[in-house]
Amino acid sequence: MSRSAWKRISVSLGVLSVLIVVAVGCGGGNGGGGAKIAYLLPENETPRYEAHDRPEFEENVEAECEDCEILYSNATGDASKQQSQAEAALTQGAEVMVLDPVDAKSAAAIVEKAKAQDVPVLSYDRLIENAEVDYYVSFDNVEVGKLQAETLAAKLKEDGSPSGPIVKINGDPADSNAALFKEGSNKGFEAAGVKVAKEYDTPEWSATNAQNEMQQAITALGKNGFEGVYGANDEMAAGSIAAMKSAGVKPEEKPSTGQDATVAGVQRIIAGQQFMTVYKATSLETKVAAEIAVALAKGKTFPQSKITDEPNNGKTKVPSVLLEPVAVTKNNVQETVVKDEFITSGELCTSAYAKACEEAGIS
Ligand code: BGC
Image (cartoon, rainbow, N blue to C red):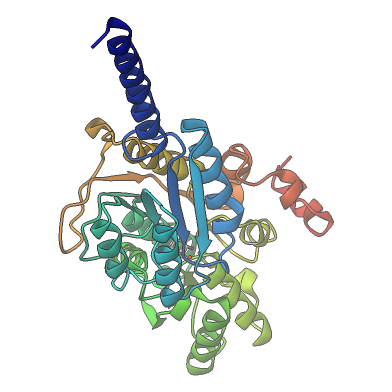
């Protein structure tokens, strides 16, 4: 073969190898460029998912990986819808799945499908049970329940009814977190000697269901048969407060708990209708989730030094990052959620709440 022929072959081999490198790079998988990340959230009645988790996750992924693409869906509280959404994301070529399950148990089937296609799964906020989950990012959810109970118990004591009793409106039993909130709050109430007169689990975390439960409790116990209300999140508090109002019970006189620091929840707090909420900085939760998702998309492992826990989900020990929740009452709205810009004073201090904001020192 002539020299020039050899040269032509080696040049084209060179071009070919460049093409191969480019192709591997674009394919996501190990290269990461343009990788598709499925982000599946469970419901949209609780405002956090659309107001915080979704936009903050998008922002944090973008900061880690400019050309990563997010395949987003919200299951609106429907576990079988979530299953189809997850399958659709896999069909569309998702290379990593970040899944906040509607149903912690049935979501194991989604994880199996993902794993069968070598797609790693990050369990987001709620732990998927009995499945080969790769990572878990959430808050210390037992601590959430403990904060709710301790803050309410202290208020009941201050008001002269240290043993309650209270009505307890728990979350959705299909959500693994609901059991953890229950565990933490039951421990907290027990330690403080607060009695629980009536207790309900609330399907789908729906405020309407919570309102019906609270209505039943008031009918059974009488208007004076309870001193406070444990609501597992701000939607549970909203339903309970609505039931109290329609039964002619003043919510200002029955301190209640919540979670998520929703705008409506914090407005009720500054107006004196809800006693407390729990602030969970979703900006941190989504940041860690984005770091892990992008690392997985690029075929890298997330640094072991950042792992804080390793809970067992029934199948495996899941490397986890669990963040710290913060209790919020009227006294610290300004230096927690407002300072962090989780809620702006503009959102909070609408004309109906302007006076309450001023009194609570919110600006
Ligand atoms: C989340 C809460 C939320 C609830 C209802 C829980 O798993 O941790 O923040 O309020 O689900 O969606």
